[in-house]
Picture (cartoon, rainbow, N blue to C red):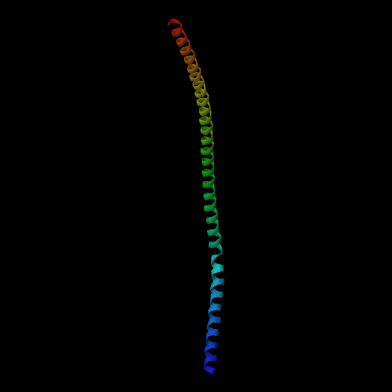
Length: 116
């Protein structure tokens, strides 16, 4: 039991020492690296700002592409409407000609019956 207690006591003591050393290392690191940490953060901020500027450029480029696409879509829609109206005129003309042909056929048949 005493050997277990002394082993546990030794382990605890060693953990406490490690923690003290870690605390001292941290204090030392914190003191030395305040300037380098600040510089690192400034570099990261600058990098972030560059990335942000690049993203803004991409957004502007994509918005311009979208506007162009919308304009093209509008032109295509207008052309389609124009095509559809021309097609409708042709279809109406075709129907008119069919009906005129029918009338002429009827007249031709009536004349041929009169001639017989």
